[in-house]
Length: 247
Length: 304
Image 1: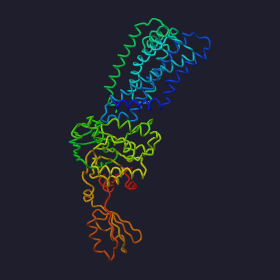
Image 2 (image 1 turned 30 degrees about the vertical axis):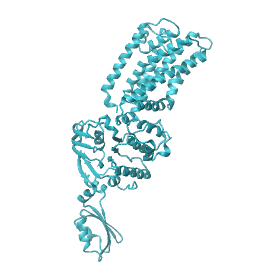
Image 3 (image 1 turned 90 degrees about the horizontal axis):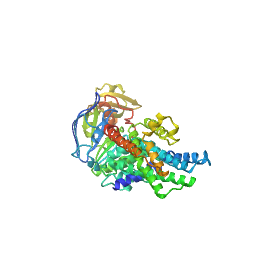
Image 4 (image 1 turned 180 degrees about the vertical axis):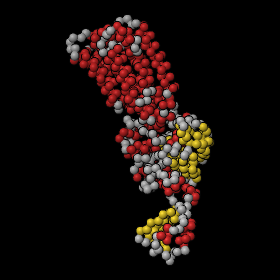
């Protein structure tokens, strides 16, 4: 337990506190976009519900960046910097490392959600019942699991350039096709059909339904669960068949 | 400590290790010497369980090399070590210490690696030599009985290398078992209690340095004389000769024979005879057939 706590503490310092890339891409950029769209470009023209919807969208977008972009790069860097080799040549198991990573990611996802919610609430005077805040935050936090699995899967590419390429090719299309930037209804029917079956769309839809007090479609839970199962399988497969590449 | 039998390692069709046998007793300091690509690092990686042999058996502390719990007694400083850039030195040591059951105190590790004054620095701020010293401290974190050091002094300056070998000497006195490779053959010659010369996947020599020197009678003999140089170059055991004023220097293949010939001339035509036995680098060069790696620098003796 002491080893897990030390690993978690040191990993947090390395991966987040002393990593300006994380602060910029995963936190400042989504906050910046939120303020740009709700305060600068649409000054006085947007409804309160748009501000709420956009808060949820940008929080989901931030979670994509933390889990898909940052996590995949962090996992790859840990391998490149020899952290996994250090653990392999010690009596400690790699479970310690992965437990610490998940603990930190849980904390970071939680903090990300809180920070964006606070900025949105203060900048646009958003008002919700505390249970709605809690429920929305709780759902987004829980639903970041498939995104985390996606980041882990990408890290198995074991090449910095390929990881960057795959992260870009997945993160931005996922955000656009899931309606995070503009409503999915604005897109052609075929594109809408694809978007609705991607892992991010139902996460965002469920959170929006919660803040806008709309009915949550259970099919969205099904799609999220389905993607989680698929991605768990993918990570297990990649770990088993590519473990030779990870030292 | 280590028991290797008929160890063979092959990458595709290339045989790197061709059936090695090796037994290492506690307290031995093994200097593993060989050209680039001779299989030194492969052998170390096999002993650490990072590679699986094509054939043969390896027992480390009586167990398979990749048994997790025996790493409480094994430390390794490998060539690919790149300590974690965004941690401070003291934090990285604290992290790696937490992996072990009975780690050495952080202060001891900092002293061992001569990094006390850099403890609060970020690892990214360390020089190449300081990074290698940190890697050494990390290898020592668990207070291992068996230590693998693969090219430990690469990147270290002269002073750091001197301090590093002093620490290894202390570990030697404590009875630690050390397997080390280094391109600085002078360092191996001084510290190793047993030398293994690896060539073409086989041990060309396995024994102590004194025995190796006796096997290779090559030496450098110098003296002052008024005789012409060609008088000495005619001797069958002289392989080359040079003259600087009255001083003559001979490279000889059999020092006993040349000394006997010089003795008859001593105090009449030859004075002030000095003999310098072959260094490990000289012998290594001969075993390798005159080939020596560019970085196997026998002239770079400042580390001691």
